[in-house]
Amino acid sequence: MAAATVIAEGAVVRGRVQGSGDLAIAGRVEGDVEITGELVIEGKGLVAANVSGARVVERGALKGDLTASEAI
Image (tube, rainbow, N blue to C red; front, top):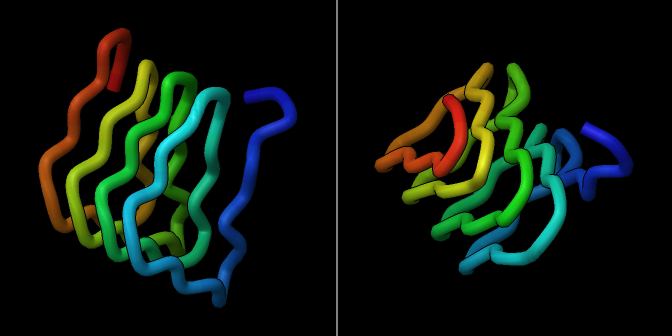
């Protein structure tokens, strides 16, 4: 993952997150996440919704469906 956008530990995002490029989530997201690149849910990260990306790495917690077009 090169030059990813980061939702930092302690941050809370409520609502849909979508975009191109890579995303790392170390905080909490309460809403669907749709990324065209790599999506990493870090060890302390939590996503309470559905996620999709080209490549998805789940190290944290996910409460929803996971979809990847290339690899999980």
